[in-house]
Length: 287
Image (cartoon, rainbow, N blue to C red):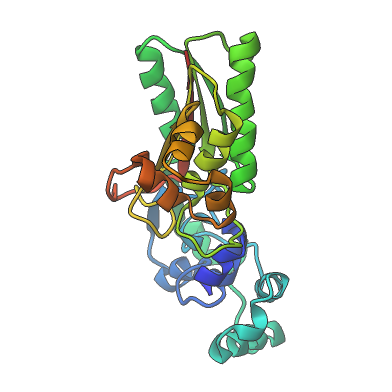
């Protein structure tokens, strides 16, 4: 179910709404089952905006979603009909009140719970900003709410690089713009890649021939999609180099095959699994 939702471009909030209603501990159930014990949750947020009920599917937080939401999401992405019968039966029983709804605001179990976010995308972005500034760059932390279709975001970020070089707006060079969040990929091809690699490939088309601009985009857990790469790095020469190597960047993009594209060029960012995840970071450097 999770893989099907990811392939359809569902948001993490939508995915978690479904997962909470087919789990014994997500969606507040861990707090409910631990009650009357005192529970302290130390949270690493892998969700844009750090909503407590969505991080790790909110095992110790009141759930704001419902069985009806979960069913509606599966139908929205045309997954309902092919879902396992056991999951459909569970969700329908919940809709009828046969299965209990996830614990909600006001449940006494949450009176003995404390949730603390100790790591987040914003914290990681600010650390990146400080390091880039330490190296002499003018810096701008633009947002930790970057969402949307990866290839469209990549094109937009490429336009920021071009704007900086053209007008010095919003920063004068040398500079770095830092963004965080989590984009999505609507899979239409049968290639291999991840959202950060697809974002970078789209950006490379926008900055083709531009001198002085670089974009790198990575997943902080070191694993971008179903690949062993954290992400990719591009500049104004990426497309020229690709075409000289006989690669058609548009074809790779349309086939969601960004991993193969960057593998051929040697432009994948390989960190290995980092052991943590605070979603994605994208950095634009312009000199």
